[in-house]
Image (cartoon, rainbow, N blue to C red; front, side):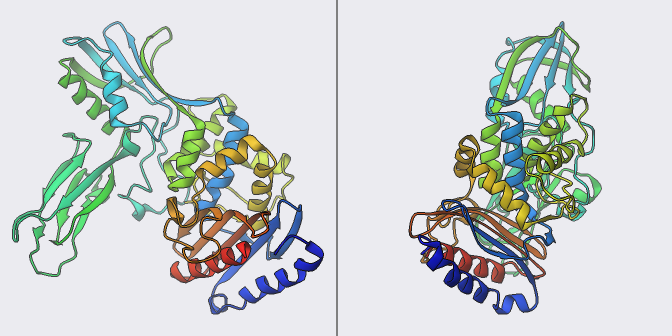
Length: 440
C-alpha cells in the first residue's frame, strides 16, 4: 500500500481522514501522526502539535533517553556492605530486585554471625516517594508504589485468595512472606451474598493490614504496595538473616561509610529495566530510569525533578523540540506532563535511526495480539503481530504509539493520543482501526 508514495499518499490520507469522522471524535479529541520510516516521508498528520497528557506512552521517551544517556553497559546496583559488626543494604532503586536475590545476598553471611546494626542506606534519592500530581487514591495498587532506593518485589506483596468449602474463609497465600504486614480474612467462600470480593490494604491510615472482604467465588490475585517500601525491604531482609541464624540486634537508617567491604551485589542492566517498563507498563521501572538520569547531575540525593530536566534537555538540544511542552515524571502518571504527538514521533524516529536504541525498544514494546499490554488486541485484523507499540491509559486519556509493518514491508511509526473519552474501550477500538489501516 505504501510502496509508491506518489500513488499511495492521497488514498492513505483519505483513509486516515475518514477515521477522524468516527463518532468517538464527536465528544473526544485525537492527535494522529503516521510516518513512513522506510521511505522517510510523512504520511498523515492531524493536530500533531497539540499538547496532550501522554500517559504511559511517555515511557518511550524516558526509555530512549535513558538508553542514550546512560549507555547500554549501565547497571542499577544493590549492595550488601560490611564494616566491623555493622551491615548496610545500599540501594539505587532497582525496580526488579526479587525475594530470591535478597535471599542469595543473605547467604554471604556465615551462619551464627552477630550484627550490631543492620542499616538501610537510602542516600541515593530524597524522601519524596511519589511524582508531582500523582493521584493519592491510586494507592494501594502496584502501579503506584512508594519509591525508595530499596525496593523488594517492586515494593509490593502478592496476595492470592482461593475459595474453600462453602461458607468457610478463602485460602490466602502471600508472597513474599513477612511479619511486616498482616492479613485479616473476613471474606466467605461461595457465600451466595452477592457482595463484591475485595482485597485491599488500609492505605489511608498508613497501615499494612491487608483485608479480604465479600463473597469469594473464584481465585483472585492482587499486588498490594507496602508503606514505606524501605522498611518493608529491611523487615524481610532481617527475617531472612534470622532464618539463616544471623543475629541482628538493631535496624536503623544510615549511610554506608567509605571503605566498607562488599559482601554481595546485584547488578541490573538498564536494558532489562527498559524492557519491563515498556512490556508491562511498569511505572516503577520508568521512574527508576528517570532517577538514574537525574543522577547524571552528580549530586546526591537525587531529587525527583532532576530526571525530567535531563529528558527535556535531550529533547531540546538533540531533537530541537519546541519549548511548548512539559515533562514532570518518567512514567506519565503526572497530569502536569504535556507533550505533543510530534514530540513522541521525533523520539520514535530517533530511536529507529540508532540501532542500539531500536533493538532494545523492539524487545520491550508489546507485540499486537501476542504479549504485554497489547496481548488481547488486533486479533483478526491486518495489525495482528505486525504492530509493536506502547499503550497508555489514565482516566480520560488513552494513547498508543510505536511501530507497524505495512503490507509492502515498509516500517511505519505512528502516534495516536486520545483524550476526553470517559471510557477507554471505544478509544482502543478506534486505535485498533488505525493499526489495521497502517498494516493494510
